[in-house]
Image 1 (cartoon, one colour):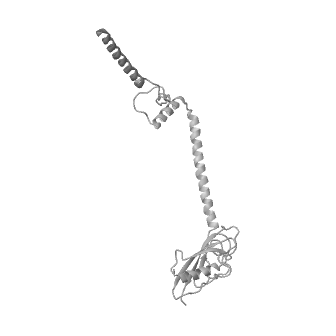
Image 2 (cartoon, rainbow, N blue to C red; image 1 turned 180 degrees about the horizontal axis):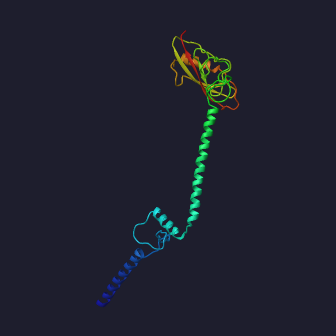
Length: 243
């Protein structure tokens, strides 16, 4: 009976021990990770020659110098040919200098023969290039200003366009003095389709003066220009001066 009890005890201990080992193998055993890791190569040191010594990587300029020295050691030079090449380079440089000098002289001669903006021709007048009499057909031939004006200091600015007839005058709604600048948008037919009174430069900002300038501006018409922008921006300046 005593031997049988020991055998049973030994069997239980053995089963428990082997069971523990199996459980440890299940949880701690080797396994293959998925996905598999990518293969990695070995980086090779960059260089330009088969031999070398040291731990510091030379910079690109030094590598180019070594490569050029290796190539120069292989080349041969004929002294007579070198002299001819040098002489050709000198001739080319001299020719370039001569050409540049001739171009400068030609430019100076043209400026002397055809001066710009001097207005010596009695049939031409203006402050820009070209032939013609710059100004407004409704203006004063003795006036010095080339910006459109129409009495009492009223004026307009619209590049390449002229006012049709005269610039409409606004009503004088009070006894203040100053000016109102109106921003205008003109279509290709010369009609003002949009306006804003009292933009930067205005000194009278009361509503009655802004309305007077706005209403007068909408009555203005400019010459048609099919090549102009669909809506060309400009300004009309009205000066309110007490008489």
